Amino acid sequence: MRMKISSDISELASVFRKAGFSLYLVGGAVRDYILGKKNSDYDFTTDAEPDEVKKLFRRTIDTGIKHGTVTVIFHGNHYEITTFRTEGDYLDSRHPESVSFVKSLEEDLMRRDFTINAFAASLPDGRIIDLHGGMKDLRHKVIRAIGEPEKRFSEDALRMMRAARFSSQLGFRIEKNTLSAMEKLHSTITNVSAERIKEELWKLIDGKEPREGLEAMRITGIMDEILPELARTYGFEQGGMHRETLYEHLVLALESARDHGYSLTVKLAALFHDIGKRETRAKGDKDREWTFYGHDAVSADMTDRIFRRLKTSNEERERVVHLIRNHMFAYTPDWTDSAVRRFINRIGVENINDLFFLRVADISATVGHQPVPDNLLAFSERINAELEKENALTIKDLRINGTRLKEIGITPGPEMGRILHALLDEVIEEPEKNKPEYLEKRALSLAQCQAQ
Image 1: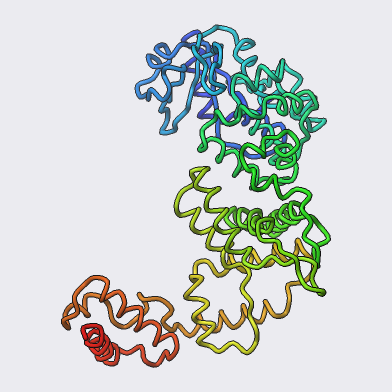
Image 2: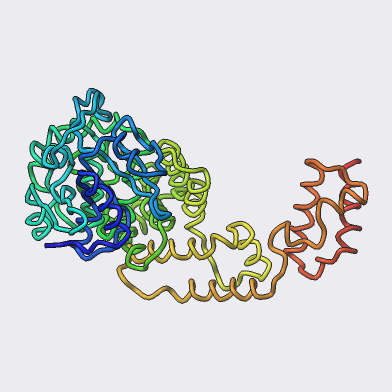
């Protein structure tokens, strides 16, 4: 089998060939080509050592020169090229103690993680090389460690998360010996940085079969190390309208978000939206076996701690937590227009769609694939109607700003902030008051009251 090679990469390879070196495309790009998937994340390997690679090209970057990687800038494109290498012992389950350059492609491929990632395509002819039975494992949809699984995972514990991630992304099962090694070494995942774990976990959650990846984490004990809060939901009965356990409900919500094509933000919120139910369950009355009052707030707080532990960005953490904290909103048709505007103000226009998507995923995971309730559709229509009116919903929508307040004698600082919020509160209640003349007069009145 041959891989189709672009003219730019063929020209790149010809530079190596003319100098007496070989160049190969390796890893995921070759795997995805065989699977018929697009992948432009190319990794190259060569028998040329880093200094020799640098002599072949006018522009290079020492990306990871210590580990044999040089970035070559060729025809305006950046190509990461790594010298064939073997790696010494991994004393910390993260980094090799040493790296040795070798002249053998076979030795280089032996150090890779899974058979389906150990393909190489010779350049420029594109001939695919499979030395570890990767083609067979692709056909049978199997994730199998190269050689001894325990050795592979001892070298880099993150490979266990990668196995679970590939299981989700590709919908493949993990071979039993590979899975057993993950179970035996699961506690070593704590040697890996939170940032690297989060990157793999997010890809798993965003995969086409997230249940497969999550289950691999759960049954091997990796989930207990990384997401103990989620692991504890397994087997937890909710009762009432929930026939499924809490863990199953959360996974079903995630799958619903996937089926609807929602964003990663919504998928994350779906997976964690009820994670606090275990902490809030209380005995109900004769009509309800259990209650979970305040589980939305507790779930939001727990998610906040999880995201901090995984060192996510503040923006991502705050947005997901915000959705979870507000996912139990209860609209009724008797809401006034001003109540709808206050809801929009509290949630944020930029979060409205995601919050409704989260509610849809939650409903689907509770009662199955049913139509969106009429009540939710009616609320959405009212929100859209208010947005079309272009009334003031945030401070920036007011027909007055801090600069003007300063001009009329109001000192910048907490006092000005309180006045602006008070003005917005009035305007949300009565949109017709959003006029500069009224707002200036009212601001001065509020400032006088605060001074007394």
